Length: 67
Image (cartoon, rainbow, N blue to C red; front, side):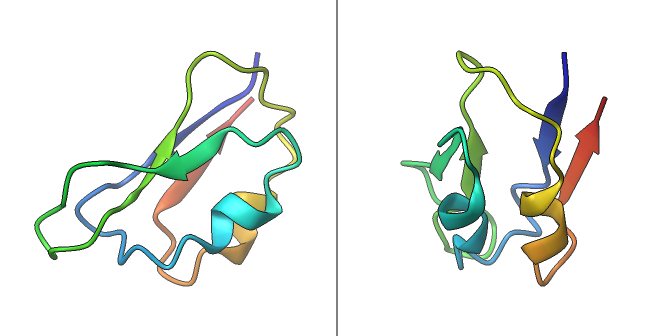
């Protein structure tokens, strides 16, 4: 099953990835990261399609997709 990893400390919290995930598997984390932003967080309880839209839209290349 595909999955993604998000580099929380590199994420600036723009949350563009949240809007493009067709499964709604990315949300804003409740805790702040080292940059003082609420980073994106991958919900483990869903089925990732491996479409890579989140990785493509991330301006800081914080997301990696594994198939």
